[in-house]
Amino acid sequence: MSALTVQQEPRGGDSWEGLVRLWEETDWPEGCRVEIIEGIITVAPPPGNHHNYIAVKVQRALTPVLPPDCEIYHTLNVAVPSRSGLFIPDLVVAPDEVVLEDAKYVPGAAAELVVEITSKSNAVNDRVAKLHGYAAAGIPLYLLIDPHATGEPAIHLYGEPANGTYRLLWSGKFGETVKLPEPFGVAIDTSRFPRP
Image 1 (spheres, rainbow, N blue to C red):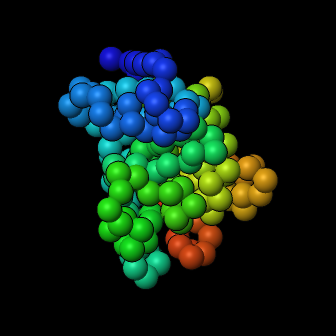
Image 2 (cartoon, helix red, strand yellow; image 1 turned 60 degrees about the vertical axis):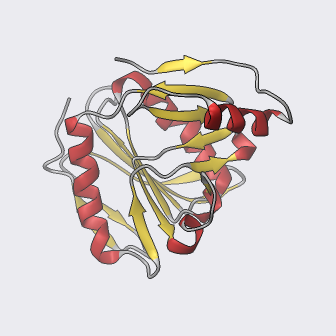
């Protein structure tokens, strides 16, 4: 099953509030990932086994080096209203205090790190829309793991967001080690990442 795009006019209020209200009030298929990407509600099936395996290996590498009072989340809703986005990254490192607030999502600016692992059907969202959205939110680090890159699987580490744009800090391929800067200061071995 590939991603499904649902376009519908927001109900009431400005477009961002209307989109979020539609996102909250609609009865979406159980288990699907429902995001708002550049003002369009997108429904995607749950990730497959290879996708989840990569996420678990990255989580295992990050766990010992988490900043104090932060945790790793798998299904945290991250809002970037300036880009009409409400994303669900594969992994998010965010402070406990923000996650414990009574809200359906956390502001993107609160995240320390987001990790996206592309799926074949919607990889362009992770490569383009989310790249710009996370940078616009000022999230310090964005790790894009792209098993579906043209040619061979690739990994890109973005950081130093300024004026809605990231700087590419590192780029490599599966099998290489990606080193995350402080506050993580960890090397992630990608040699066991499965290829599609």
